[in-house]
Image (cartoon, rainbow, N blue to C red; front, side, top):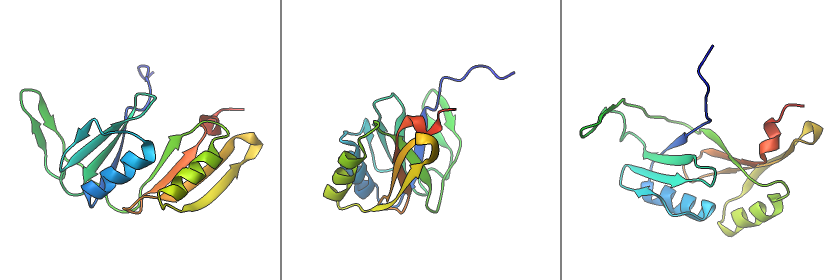
Length: 140
């Protein structure tokens, strides 16, 4: 039996232009980054998880953390998917917010059994973002 988990801590996206991505996510989330460097930007979300943006290719080699250890290499390419939890019934407000940012809603899905409504969009690097209520994954 596995030891208990407390949840997901980080979601990472790999971006081609850090300044562009940091600006986009700062405006999308209405948040200032905790860390804003050339190779990494970190946004703390309201539930305590973090969204990490890595400059594509900048983490392909191990990163030594002085006095702490080494972070193994990682990287990604292609359009990734991620979902952000939103409040039930806030889709209209999010649709307007995306429009104000000049970001199109690419698709919408009304999930069966009343599990909610998702909005899909693309970030400047082509990643597929989803805005959906947490109940989408509730068991019935």
